[in-house]
Length: 343
Image 1 (cartoon, rainbow, N blue to C red):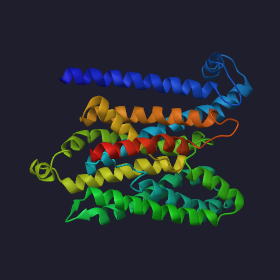
Image 2 (cartoon, one colour):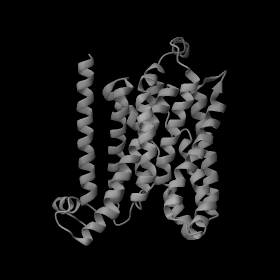
Image 3 (tube, rainbow, N blue to C red):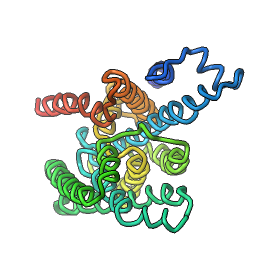
């Protein structure tokens, strides 16, 4: 049985790595400026120097593909953790309000502080590196409010969790919209696009700002895979094993918030990846999180790279924000899960 599970896991990894490669290939070679695969290979491997190709690949397309992959991984990992600690397959950072809390904090930063930092002649790196920190504070506040109102006799009520999350999501969303409307016209345009979930203007600085968060907390989550397996048991059974249940839940929740905050600070609020990726991984591989966590990360990366490619090409020369594309896919999937859960 273990060998069979391992074989399925490795097949899943190979399949989704291949899908990531195909989606990245399509993303890199298609667009307003068309490039052949040979042009891309020569440019990346430095076989042939061409300033125009260098600009398109290294300044626009490659950072965008990398950001889509990393954000997809981060949101998928966060969703896996939330579903594990809540025992609810419908839990997702976007649906229960953590994305909204992080987004509001980042917009507050953009509204009150970013311009001042730039006016003080500080390097733009300072602003970008601070955005995940603000996102973490906002996401933590949202998560604390959700768990405060959803707790019943120190136990999470799943129905109340979803309803509270929707309310928190709406509240933070309204606050974010209010702040964005107070911005000047040019700042509002960029903020509105960012809030819809967009990575079209991603660059290497954004990648460097989020990468340490994903590496640190991604590794932490994987090391806690055995705990997520135990969390499928009744709480009394988990405590009888000597596990400090509430303490471990808080640690994993904070790790999930940190992952979401790093992603939101770069891409804006993108929902449903944290819902779909873990669910697909569980359908393919079962309940063991040492298989689910890495598989979910790759599924999330493949979904978001593909969604960004669709948003870039299908509506060309206009471009649809990746968050909208994911929602078009994710809403029917969410309704399917609701119906399945009801049955």
